[in-house]
Image (cartoon, rainbow, N blue to C red; front, side, top):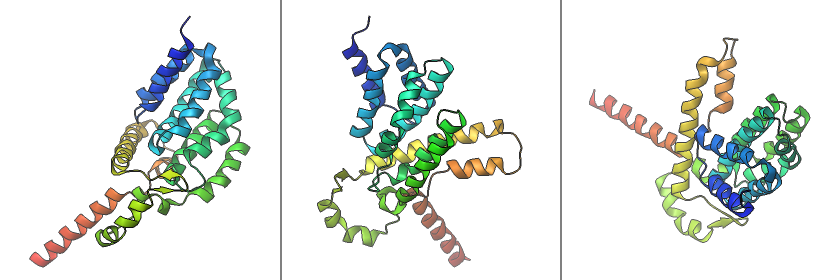
Length: 239
């Protein structure tokens, strides 16, 4: 029999190193089912890592939860599903906290909740109840990675940002975390585009799916728009 402490430590490491790839989530889910006799301990480990890790990693864990519940349901090991049903509010509070620090994760939560509902893991009433709470947390302007800030404003606020490294006890994401989140969102959107062919041709279904899954406007989008505008201006002046 495997050592419970070693199993927990390896699973913790897998959760901490989750990324946007499906293989990453599936590998962690397979590990859970391999040691299903320790399901309660592994479930507590998931909740623990949701409280301790960055917002980017919490989003990855949220996607992993959907994979885990789906696999557990198909393999008829429903303990993981039942425990997640019981603690789903706790999970949502960790991934998209009410203080606005996880505003960038609100769409992630909605996407996973809809997926769990479609798989009959969560009841529509439960998803609707959580959705009413998420509407109050969808304050994208609170997230520094998604707020357009010009160079002058950025210089003026450098000292204030340095002194306010934490808001409501939650550390602001640094530049590396923001860049990592952008890359992970790009990876997920790439997979989404690759899977569009599998969607049946039923009216605006493709458009609605893309609209629901697409990420909000990010800092790199503003930079690209400014560069395009500058190029157009130069072209007009040249003519």
